Length: 241
Image 1 (tube, rainbow, N blue to C red):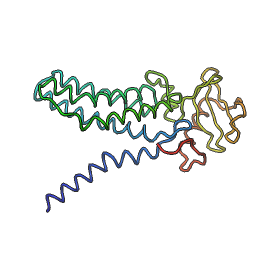
Image 2: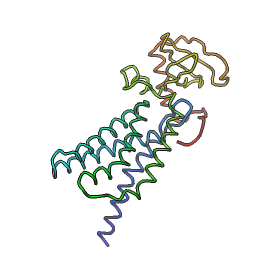
Image 3: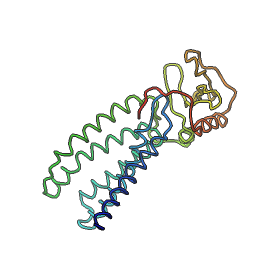
Image 4: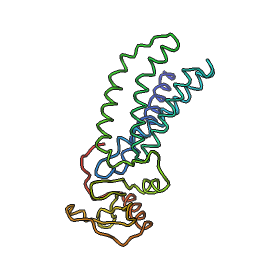
């Protein structure tokens, strides 16, 4: 009975660490423009966890067989997951692409390892969930693609806006970093081309953007204050993740 109780406790601890805490953190994620970003935040955390576990498997493989093709595959998987986690946390398109690439790698890895070591692996039970996850993520990030940072990797300038929970927005007329004014919920946008802040009333989205007096630092501060609000009064398009 004691050993069974210990096993139960370990399972509960595993579920809390691997699922519960990531979900709790993801539920607090600020939206990406008008879309929720909880699902992406959850997979950013899970990708980091997968990177750690894969690195441990890689070290075990190296200890047994040396650095062979199998160890290289585990190393590649580790790098993909780690870069995907960082990219998703910075809300970058590269993070979404790397996440899907890592999921494809997860799908292929058992068969590749089995072929390398002449030990065929039955991958059929794991095929459907991974395929479904890949399809779900393709559709999820397709909706958010325009609002994600397009740089291959975040510049210092982009990281400052990402940390302040700004999102990159682009349309036919204007592009820049978008957030909200914490005092009145106005849309605020840092126009990268003209290096100035624009403002538009939240209550009337058809009113054109107007130049505002805030400089770069003041614009960033408004974004930080909006991020820090515990109960935003604005509605986000599309509930869910």
